[in-house]
Image (cartoon, rainbow over all chains, first blue to last red; front, side):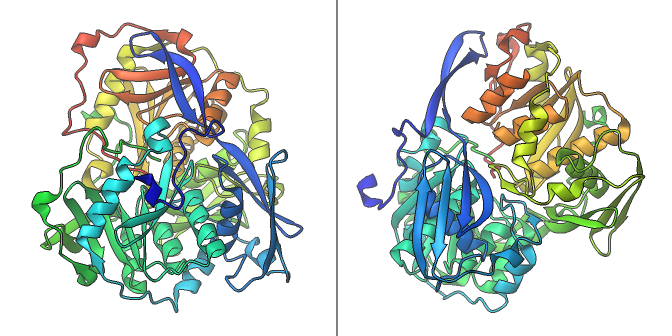
Amino acid sequence: MTARFSIAPNPADPRLTRAVEGVDHEGNPTTLNVVMERPLTIYLNRQEIVTAMTIGDYPEYLALGFLLNQGMLRHDDDVTAVDFDEELDVVVVRTARETDYEDKLKKKTRTSGCAVGTVFGDMMEGLADVRLPATPVRTSWLYALAHEINTAPSLYLEAGAIHGTVLCQQDRPLVYMEDVGRHNAVDKVAGWMFREGAGAEDKILYTTGRLTSEMVIKTAQMGIPVLASRSGFTAWGVEIARQVGLTLIGRMRGKRFVCLSGAERLEWDADLASVAEEDTKHRRKSAHG
Amino acid sequence: MTARFSIAPNPADPRLTRAVEGVDHEGNPTTLNVVMERPLTIYLNRQEIVTAMTIGDYPEYLALGFLLNQGMLRHDDDVTAVDFDEELDVVVVRTARETDYEDKLKKKTRTSGCAVGTVFGDMMEGLADVRLPATPVRTSWLYALAHEINTAPSLYLEAGAIHGTVLCQQDRPLVYMEDVGRHNAVDKVAGWMFREGAGAEDKILYTTGRLTSEMVIKTAQMGIPVLASRSGFTAWGVEIARQVGLTLIGRMRGKRFVCLSGAERLEWDADLASVAEEDTKHRRKSAHG
């Protein structure tokens, strides 16, 4: 099944999880597989930008996506190299011309998500002229995506305590990224799209996280017209989605979901009788944050 | 029941949630209560420090706790005033002497949590000499706390998409803070403790979030010897907990939990037969992030 993914989680990767010994509720010894968390320092040319805590897969995509989503790298920037040093946990993104990242470092905003160093003012500014394409969304796609994503082998199902973000096209999940911070997962998707030159207008972004203002802003900045989640909404997230024309679907559980923005783009082609209620075996338990 | 809380969530507060109209999975109109999310700009004396996205309750506690947990304010600092301007969404913390926060602003770390501007190096340094007291923990307390917290009226149960952090003493939840970012909720608890001069050595911190390195570090910095969660662990979170002597309990669901640090401090006094499996009605669904 995961052959359908261009990139799928690799729960078998020994660098991503570790067995830890503990004690269970009855006082018996137990061993738990827990996700790794390691620092990755991102440089843009000679400038150290940030140290992100990450599970450590796809450092190049994470670095590119972080810089893009922070507005420190533009889509027309000529990236001449992305060098990852596994010993030093450092990734260096090199561009042909110097960028204006220094201004970006002067202010920081702490959002409900996890974007250290995000310049919130800039994020809102950048959205003033964003109008996303009115891409139609079939409800049958949403159910197919939720089922395939929630049943795909993942670090989440293996170890929990991790977030997932999946770039999808119609009913096909393409790139499934996981990370300890859900914004890392989104950034890895953005980095992949940049590297592959993937178009955004026909994509759907699925996240395990909440539909907060920052998730909505990042998705809009990436040019993706549909954001779906099994989690809930925040008021500002909904407001911004309506402002930029993002179709926002949340609380996807089994047959159920709620659409708070762009419902006019939904095509109700799914046969609800054929949609299974959520299988508890595969139900994504609370991974939050 | 919530009379037992010194501070409990107030789901009825109209400033914290808003009714939003949308469409459900059958195409029918539906109205959802969603949590508000608003910027709060925190100043330390004349220096703008950060703009946090928050639900907006207890801005003074959030500002104090953020500055304390970022190491920009010390417990021996003389806070002369905390002024909140509701019009401007600004809170100003005034201290008798200038602080060394400027150094702290030179570097930023993005963690798996939500601590913009956190200086990770400093966080680890600050822990070098931290040894938490070996406070005993009765398993009966853990079950009592989980039950009372999960059944208390909350924004989470009302609107979802929110995180909770609860300061507890033995089997009593004292201060239950919620916010769109779980680190805001922790910081509000820290601010309350600072204002009330509450001791940390006999406290238990309960969080709805994952037990990541940053949650563990914050809890240790606050001097609280026990951190419990219904969510999972990260490897580094466990390592740091063991290093500082923090009792770390995760995956608390009904009868079940796992202790990956400090198990020798647990007192197994609970009668498991009397502990109800989790009531699905009150089960905290995935609030993540």
